Length: 292
Length: 320
Image (spheres, each protein chain N blue to C red):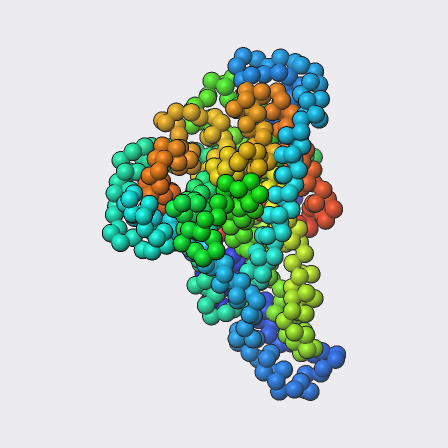
C-alpha cells in the first residue's frame, strides 16, 4: 500500500521550530541591519540617521585595527590548534597501551566553561602569585600586561580550550581510516612519516575542512574569553571586533554604531563559513559528520 | 577492541574496520610470500597493536598532558589554601594545611542561587529545543514537500550566524517584551541559537529509520502523530540524548546572553557569577578558584557517568 500524503507529517510539524528560530535568530539579523542606519542610546526608540554609522565605520581607525586583530587571531589560533589537534588525534586513535588513560586527561578542558577557563588562566598567569612564577624562565613574565605578549597569551588560552574538541574530531576521523591501507604501505616499505603524508592526511581532508570552518568562525566570535581575561586590554591590544562592538554598544551606549559593527561581524562570520563550505562542498561535510 | 571503548566516539560500526580486515591485500611491488622477515614482523606487530613507538606524537602527547594537568592541579590546590598561604607559598607545592574555608565562603554566598538559575535555564532550553526539533526533524525526514525543505534550508543557514551579531537587536526585543532581567530572557535566544545544530542532528537520525516501519504504522491505521509518538520517539532516543547534551552544554556555558539580558543577583547564572567573583573577592583568589572548581563538578559528574553521551553531545557542535 502506498503511503498517502495524509499519512506523512505536514509542514505544521516544522512550523513551531521555524517560528521560534525566526523570532529570536532571523528577525534580529534583519533588525541589526535596520539598526545600523539609526541612532539609539539604548533608551526609547531608535531614530533613523541615514548612512552616518557606516561613513563613521569606514573612517574609524579603531574598528579597522579590531578587524585586523580579529584576522590575526584567526590565523594564529588556526596555526596553533591544527597541527597539535591533528597529531594528538591521530595518536589517540591508535592502540597504545597507555592511550586510554592519557586520553581521559587530554579532554578535561572540555569540561570547563569558557568563563571558568578564562578565570583559571588569569590566576595561573598572574605576575605575582600565578603558577608560572614557580616555573623556570617564566617567572616575572607579565603575560597579560605586556601589549606585545598578550595577543599570544590569549591565542594560547583559546587554543588550550578548543584543542581537545578538535582532537576529538581528528581522532574519530583517523579511526575510520582502514588499517589495511597502512599494512599495504608497510609492505611496500613506506615509513611512518610517509604513511602519514600519503594515507592519513589525504583521508582526513574533510575533517580538516570541518575543523577549519569551526576554528575560523569560532575566532570571529571569540568574546567571553577575552572580555574576562583582558577586557580588550591592556589599552586596546586585544580588542577584537566582537569586543569592540560590545564596548561601543553596552559601555558607550552607541547602539546604532555598534549595530554597524555587528553587521560587519555577521558578514565576516557568514561569509567565511559559506566560502569554505561552498568551495569544498557542504554535502560532503555533512556526510562526513554522519560517520561520527 | 576493548581499549577503544572509553572514548566512546564511535559505536563500533566504523572503527572496527581495521581489526576485521587485518589481511593485507597482495602488493604488486612486494608479493606477500617474498616479504622479508623483518617487514612481516612489523605487519604482525601492527596487527597486535605494538608498532614502533611514534616518538614525535608520544612526546607531543606528553607535553600536552603536562599543559593540561598543571593548570588544573594549580586550580584545585589553590582552592584548598588559605588566603595568606596563597600569597606566600610556592604555587605548585601541595597545600600544607588543606582547608575547606574557601568552599564554605562560596557555598554560603550567592553560589547556590547562581547554580539554581543555571539549572533552570539549562532545563528549560533543553525542553524547548528537544520539544520543537523532534517534530520538526520528523517533518523534514518524512515530508519532501517544497515548503518543508525550504524551511529546513533556512534553519541550516542559521548555522553560519554568529550570536554576537544578533545581541543588540535581541536586547532591543527583550526590553520591548518587558522580559529584561528575567531568566526567560536568557532562555529564549539561547534555545533559538541552539536549534539549527539540534535540527541537523535530529533530521540525520530520523532519516535512518527504515521506510517500512513507517508504512507498517500506516497499515495499522496510525496517523502522523501516532507514528511520532510510538515509532519516532523511541527510535530517536540516541539523537534526543545527543541534542539534549549539546544544548545543555551550550546553555550551561552561556555567557553573552546572560551578560546583556540580565542584571540583578537574583537572575545571575553561574558563568556570570564566576566573573562577578573576580571583582567581588578581589585578592581572595582561593575563594574565586574554589567557585571555579565547584562550577566544574556537575559536568565532571556527567563525564564520569556518561562520557560517551557527553562526547557525542560535544561533537554535535561540529554541525556548526
